[in-house]
Length: 310
Image (cartoon, rainbow, N blue to C red; front, side, top):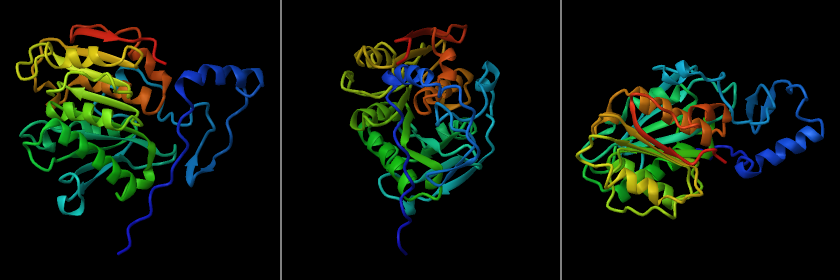
């Protein structure tokens, strides 16, 4: 059997730092006020509008929409048998069933030490229904260390974009990584190894490496106030502070939460993960309102940021 052809690619988004200049140029040229283009196809993918941001997906967000257990996209899922892949031990793919708005960004999610994908499975449908293709993975060994989990997250993204059954639904230039505990540490390792990623979200991450000054990927670090496995003082906080000051980054500490908080449905984890992924994978500035100014509330012990985001 011949391998399936790679998914069609789309141009990388216009550099974030230059988008205000692009908008001014379009306005000056009278182009910003042009009506939407008729439905058609771009790179073989049907589109309904030629928007200033071609990666924007779904209706305008609200607090209710990002806190909801399901987003606006109908989804399906498919199993990835371990025997069918290399570099990781299979997993589950969750994906929007319609591509009427175009292709989607993709997110790979790793569990933590001794855990299986079931510990992060709730994130699959939660994120996919907001307009992402998501794969929750099993690692080659439940005892794999963070660096190995990072390599496996990248292998899962490569599988998604190159050979998976949903590859034509994915924009290979809009990819992200997440993970819990050692999987969270793995997301930092993956971001460090592949700066072309669009976002990283370590959830109560654990890693022996504390200096991530070479990371160039927008990163949301999520810690838990009462984490005794990966105390924020020796893990999440050093991770955040070591990231470059010029980087789009944020630190969210869950009030009164334990290390396992991200392993079951958690509204706070979900709403800010969705906002971060939408903002940096889809470059959807409609979600900036949930990140800047810094969010506050009883569920948040502390939030640090580098607002406004570039």
